[in-house]
Amino acid sequence: MPGPTDRFGTRCVHAGQSPEAVTGAIATPVFQTSTYVQEGVGRHKGYEYARLQNPTREAAEANIAALEGGAHGIAFSSGLAAIECLAKVVAAGGRIVSEENLYGGAIRMFTQVLDRLGIEVVLVDSRDPGALGRAVRPGATRLVYLETPTNPLMRVTDIAAAAEVARAAGALLCVDNTFASPYNQTPLALGADVVVHSTTKYLNGHSDVLGGILVLDDDALAEEIHFVRKSTGPVPGPMDSWLTLRGTKTLHLRMPRHNENGMLTAEFLRDHPAVRAVHYPGLPSHPDHALAARQMSGFSGMVSAELAPDDAKRLAEGTRIFRLAESLGGVESMVCIPSLMTHASVPEPDRRRMGITDGLVRFSAGIEDGADLIEDLDRALRAGHTRKDGPAGPRRPARPPTAQTRKDGP
Picture 1 (cartoon, rainbow, N blue to C red):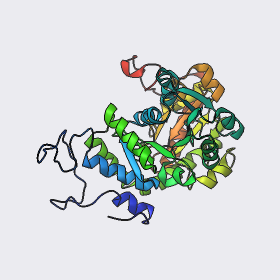
Picture 2: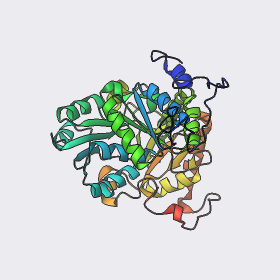
Picture 3: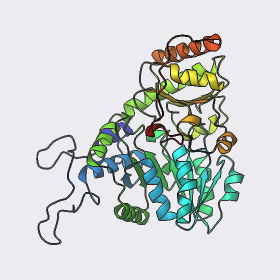
Picture 4: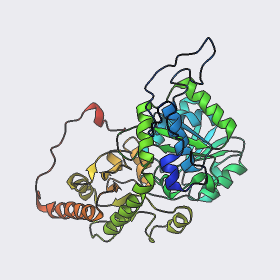
């Protein structure tokens, strides 16, 4: 098995994996089993029950931990399940200070679920060291939680500075690295204590699995997280783990194209007259560009842009290659309107205070030919622009409301 000094691409392909012991199979098998036969009462081969251990899951955990430069990877059935478990372990009865511009599902959990467990959550603009420092109270704050870049406004927080604030208060710093991926950013190396991913996104990369993971170095904390996961049960299945492991094998090949197409998308939108503003840390005009350039090696395929609300909706419904969908980080390009989709559960006054307007459009640039993506956006924007006096071609038929399209998002 390759060692920790191997370069990123080699770790993507090999870390956490060895040829299967019985047959020599080079691909990690899918251990599709719920239990394991024991040699005798209390005597087994290290595997008792699938909620506790699964070799396929362990291979994916070790692989992603190696990509983040961490000692422990602990996988979950979703990114939200990973965050919830961490909160239960480190913040029960205490305080979490979090970046305010987060995925809408994370905000919903912080503000509508964790409070039932006696956890106080304070949302701040973590780019402001003063605001972060005032919110983090020594002895009360157990966890500082960041997304950087954030969803959907692509704000960037200084991870090293936030780590100092957390450490001074005796709190842990957790960084959601989903938007950047370990190809572009390694928060543990910048001082974070824990990294969380929705493995559904760039790590898997193929839009065919749900999952999450925590990566960390602290042995005692890892043991406690394992205990809580075992006791509450939010583990990914073996096929989900295998699909994630298959995805990470090409992460180092996919991310350069995501980065390239993200920049192409941002530059095109920046120069289009219908676009009022573009949020992409790779652009020199982004207020956090200098910081992003220091702590990131690439800027991913995630871009958001401000348009007039009607133009935003026509754009999101009018693209051909960018698919109207809630997720991100797949090989396919996707587009959504956060206020109506991913962040619909956030109360409107809070959305507007954070800058999430009805005209904000979020793009996930995939790995298609970049020229086709730009032509797709140009076509949709031109069609939308000419529709001020009437329709400009066929539109997708409206779907009746269903249980899957409830207004508070997934």
